[in-house]
Image (cartoon, rainbow, N blue to C red):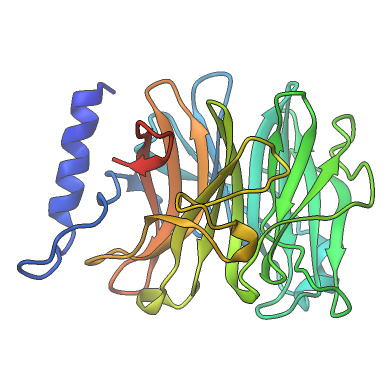
Length: 319
């Protein structure tokens, strides 16, 4: 789809939403137009070698969607249509699995995902792989990392990044002592050592959903602050910091370390867009892209997509 056409769709999306009250300025662009099956929570994207898009998101046995154009989406079943019995010790028996992370590495799809219950850090991150990404094609590769009440971190919200040296890293975390980073073995996708690095935190406050993305000379750490999962009352917002090293230290635009609660806001709720967050960032043929979920006035969770650009100082912004 041509860039001009997409810009027109973005404008139409803004007009289709309930606008802020008279005299209230829009701080951020509204989500671009998406159609079809767009009810998602915690979306993650990968562009397949054939040019189509595969999306995974929180849902029973991890939900899948596909798109040919990044605009119209359709349901594509579940990662584990026959269930994921190995996760139920962490979910209290629930089939609902959280916050997946999709990537395509060396001819295989890698999916890291979380098993937990709300408010608990008895949690685990597991790995599954597939050669096609299709529902039912995924092989359970087992546990990557877990946490319990004796830990000061929470093993949910994974995100894989491969650095410039080809090393694999998994960021994760929610509340407690914040966002962590572990190194992985590229041949297995599992941990390569026992070191757990701290890369962001709010002294026990609301921080989660890390995404690390390389642009130019910097690694950018995107996180979500504040309250998720409360429908239209959600206050989720997307923050970012950057570092020349994948292991940090990450700092906000004003120089505050993300380990000291810092972060530069690039997206927050406005008008009928409530609590946007749990972002994913990836490069596409037309632009870098940020995806996320947000809540409508009815409390429904919906897919948001925007172009992501970079200012003259190298900081990201939505457009």
